[in-house]
Image 1 (cartoon, each protein chain N blue to C red):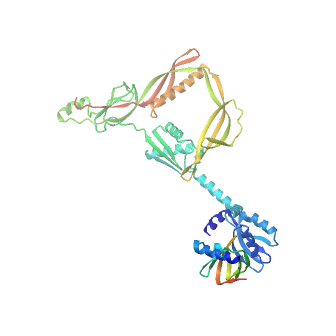
Image 2 (image 1 turned 180 degrees about the vertical axis):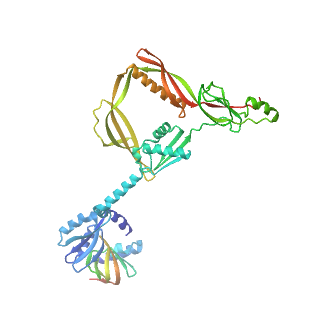
Image 3 (image 1 turned 30 degrees about the vertical axis):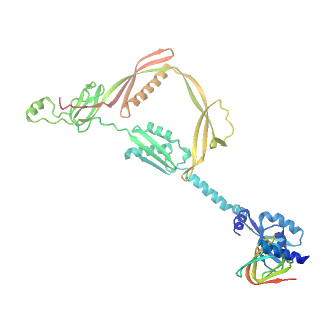
Length: 406
Length: 93
């Protein structure tokens, strides 16, 4: 009896109603032909109901043909019918599909962006920058770059950041930042002088601790003491203090901005090659499982001569799991190679721009470029050699510990 | 003829302890209380209704009476009847 419930339910069974005189004899016939019959009930004098397997219907019909009984189906049970009935309920099926897709959809958007390791103000800055990249709660995971790309862009765009680790775990983006801190070389407790690190003309001074040794508009050479850690180190006070008491030297603290200058040598070719995207592009989508890629959108190859391919792979998540399926988006952009020539003026302009960018990169975000000037230019073998003079306003303070013993 | 066959059969049953229902082609009827009756080795259904089941056996019929009968299972030579059984009667011809 037990086996019947299991297997019969899986393969399906039907309830048949037999009408005619002595309908139970029909079931007897079926049974002796090897058809399994169960739950036979006599409903009336000439009506009898019983159950047979779905796979036995054909056999039963053959037996019926030789008799005069009327057979009708009154019930359909089991898995095949259940499935049929289930699929007939379109709203239910559609609802289930939608809920599954909804799950899939929700598993593939960013729910949270967590930024750790940086102070509040930078955190906000990073948050803003991330939002501009499209990384914010509610963003579609497919539309954003890979963590490594985001990492690189963040470091480039936020100068305060020394390092950023971007990690994506499911629907959460973890971002760990390390702030670029200008490390105080000398211990703040330790007495020190502030000296010039570069030659320049001082434009601004703000001394919070220590005795200023220079004035605004003074010219300083590298190594010149800007702010002394020894208090009262002027000519008059020195005599007085000598017999009174020696004031302990302190750690000088100041901000000294000076006008410095740099000479940058550059070579700019007059003739140059570059690649350019024409703006024509086509997107192709693939569904990838393992090594197999199945195109789902964009089947034809565009008629471009030179193609730049941008391949982006997006894993599909379901709840916390990563499905072994990923969507690959390939952008085929038409590119062309251009050989261009520029005039001497254009070359100089490009060179100047390049020099400024280069210098800014070297000096950091605090330096401000005031002016740039071409000192010297020569044309040689299709190239322009430039000497550019750049005037910069920057902090020139360097700490130098005071040795108390000397 | 029939006599020595009969004797041989009872000899086989006694000497080799073979089940009598197989040798004698008689039905084996198992009754569980008054609710189930399981008949093996019958030779076909004669009548069946809500309160009566008559099965052909080797020599005659077995008649089961009661109420609210349902044939729980029907296989070529077996029947399981469920219901309230009040009597089991052998009708020999």
